Image (cartoon, rainbow, N blue to C red; front, top):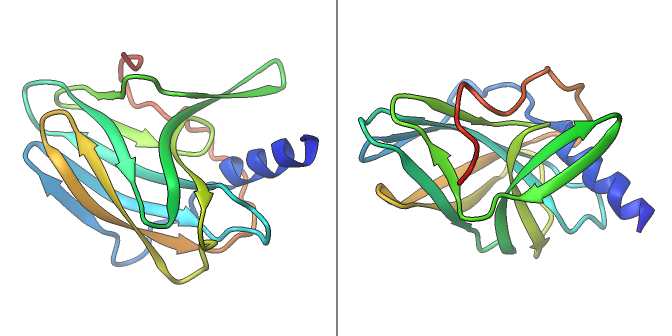
Length: 167
């Protein structure tokens, strides 16, 4: 179990690897999704992390309520915190609020997509297709660009950009 926790933490903390020159931007209604990224997975790993930015250009809050991918048996939005040197990760129950006029960053060390029971490990250079489901904007197809598996140090982002707590 300890090895699993260390592996899980390394995947989450590894984080994005810089925006590719052709970073994807997808819009649906008032929602704009940019720079979906994932990391290549180490052999034997069953979970992968996904990161992206979600901007709500509308006048009303929306909520990310689900994510699916054919590459994982399930996918969830998680929040990671480190308190007194102890990492905790929890499911964001009920969805992640995307406040009107704000951007929510899903980054290492904060909110992120957790691809669980991955059926085929993510490999550098490929893309992982997924569908995000929003309460108001509906379903949005995105492709997570997969970068290298080498760990990068965290950049200090909290995973939030002036946003409210999930509801």
